[in-house]
Amino acid sequence: MKDHIVFDLETQHEFSEVGGRDYPHLLKVSVVGCYSYVQDKFFTFEEAEIPAFEAMLKNAGLVIGFNTKYFDYAVIQPYLKEVVIKTLPACDLMEDVTNVLGHRLSLDSIAQATLGTQKSGHGLDAIRYFREGNMKKLKSYCLDDVRITRDIFEYGKEHGNVKYSSKYSPDLNSVPVDWKQYISPAGEPVSASASLSSEKDAPSVNRETGNYSLF
Image (cartoon, rainbow, N blue to C red; front, side):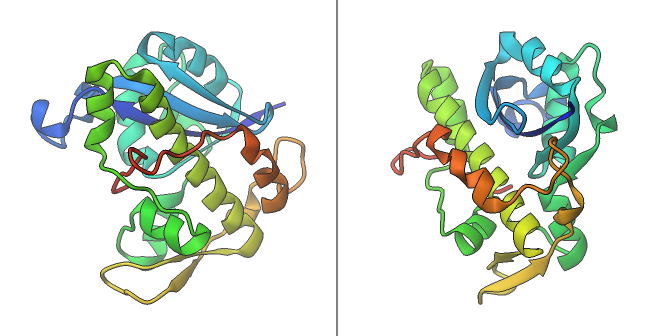
C-alpha cells in the first residue's frame, strides 16, 4: 500500500552563511519531521537517520508539504541515494495557493485563518536549537509545522478551500483548492475529522518557543 507522507525539515545553516538563496543544497539538514498516513504516526529523523526517511519515500504515493518543491527538496536531495524526490507525486500547498492568488502566503497566515492555530517564534530558532544541541525542542519545532500542514491539507480536502489573511488582503478570505482529488492510501477520501482524531499523537506546542517560518 502506497503511503501519503507530510514532511518538513529544518536546516543547520541560514542562507547568509552559504552564499544566498541560490544555494539551498548547502544548508544541510538538522532534522526531518513527517507524518505517515498509513501508520498514523509522526516521525523525526536526525541527519544521520535520513536513510530511514528515504526508505519511507520509496513507498510514497503522495508527498505533501508547504513550499517543499522550492526549498525542502533542494535541501534534502543531496542526502538521497535512490530517490529523486522531485519525481514523486506531490501536493505543495503553497504552490497551489500561489497559482490561484498570484502571490505567496505564509503558512502562519493560513493556519491562523483556517485552523485558529498560531505559531510563535522565529525560523532562526531551529538553527539555534540545533547549535545548542537541544534536539527535543528542534524536533517539536519541526513537527509543529508537519501537524499544521497536515491539518490545513485535511481542511482543504474537506471544504474545497482554505482561509487566509495577508498584507495584500487583511480581511479574512478563502481560496479554492482541489485537494479532494487525492485519495487516501486506504482508497477512500480522508475526512478532516478522521485525520484530526490522531491529534493525540501530535507534539504539544510550546508557545514560548514554538516553530514559526515564513513559508
